Image 1 (cartoon, rainbow, N blue to C red):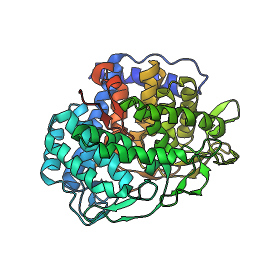
Image 2 (cartoon, rainbow, N blue to C red):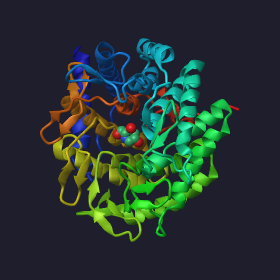
Image 3 (tube, protein in one colour):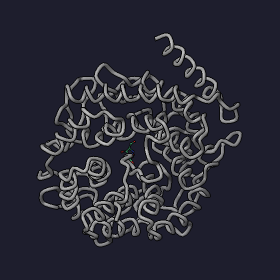
Length: 460
Ligand code: DMJ
């Protein structure tokens, strides 16, 4: 017990040394592997705590409402969002009993034969992604059959004149709706559909999702940027605001990752063509060389708003993965400035005025994801110290008796009755991997989808 306290105190001191100062501060004391492992165990315990809340009050439903202890379903009939999103994280952490529980629930109860309109993007990244990695990690072919069934039911979404998918499709009838979409929703499907194509031997999955990505890219402006709303029937932009935040973010992520996972040279070329304009027109510097990414007009490159936020915070991870560790490190330091302004980050922040624009925090993972990538790719101890600070704040403000609660307002810390499934798929997973020993996970062999489901190409 005494030893445990000493270790915790040492970890805390290391975190303070590394995290209370800005990007130019002296290097923090390195966290020992033993201290990091203690933290990984804490993350694991917190994951179990939130999972137990789901099991007790929302078993068989999509998610737990952590304040009222009630279940929540997205569309009426449950699609088991939380168990499917959680399964690979439970496996990775070695929470074997909990993983078995989730796997059996999914295999025995999950059905997609419902007369409901589902959002293609969300269902793809959470359910298709989770079922595929669940299959890859357990070998349970029932999960692959479910993924194949879901993929087949989603395919009508691509039947627009342009090949850009409609936002919603009815799982039973295949009827589509909502033709005004955005690059994240049209361009974040290829990792999941592509893997499904490889695993089932049905190339139509790969081809449909790749066409949607290419058709989005083809419509970039003459200066190389994409906007934030596009009509899937005409292919015309209906909102020219360019940025890296929600609605566009994972389009850029998949340009690079489809190259990384599949070795698809078209994706590499599209990434190479796109990242330059993003760095040129969206990157912004304020005050003493602080690097941020704001918003601009996709046609002129003119700055429109100095806005960053919790979703934009995935960008350091992507920059680092793409080889630009320098920009990644600077942007992550800015993200920490945003986090520290209120001890937890808001969904939108005016980085020039240093003011919160949208105060919500729905338990998002992106800043943790970036700390993980930066640590994995640079080996620098400061990123684990950063992770410790993030984790302590996260637990302090969001933990409840039965799980974790989103925040309505990061300035007041008022809680919201929501616990999104990405808490399990992403937030806990990235915290865990950041602190776990390097060989706990084969980073080079896997590519995370945007919901942190680690995909591996099948061995031919
Ligand atoms: C997740 O569902 C995915 O990461 C998506 O790309 C956008 N962000 C949420 C979590 O914040």
